[in-house]
Length: 157
Image (cartoon, rainbow, N blue to C red; front, side):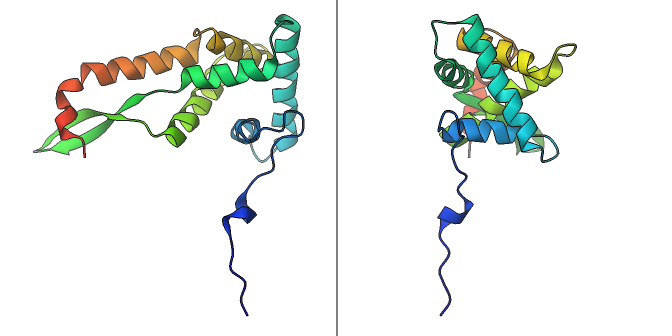
């Protein structure tokens, strides 16, 4: 009489304000030391700041555009062939694109200092939605590296 477990018990609820799974995932990635209430407050204050700076734009659309613009299409992976290491360009799966995008946006915010986190996050999201900023330059750098190593693409597994 054992019950079968389904994948539904691991599903996180969408966030309260925007009812979005992506926002909830972003808040969870933003979280440090299990302090979800702090990361939630940072995210929502950043959204309020975006609303104040861009009154004609929906903050959720700015966030979605930023995440979408930062997603990389290709990346390089090290591959050892015959005693030499090659940087082999491979296409990125959609789930990894999303996680890289979120990771790069948060890393860009954390690399800056001197201002509150919600301001840094708001600025980076607005910049990424305009295809500017540190996270976008990380994406471009990754794509350039993959393009430069196109000659080794036949080593892809």
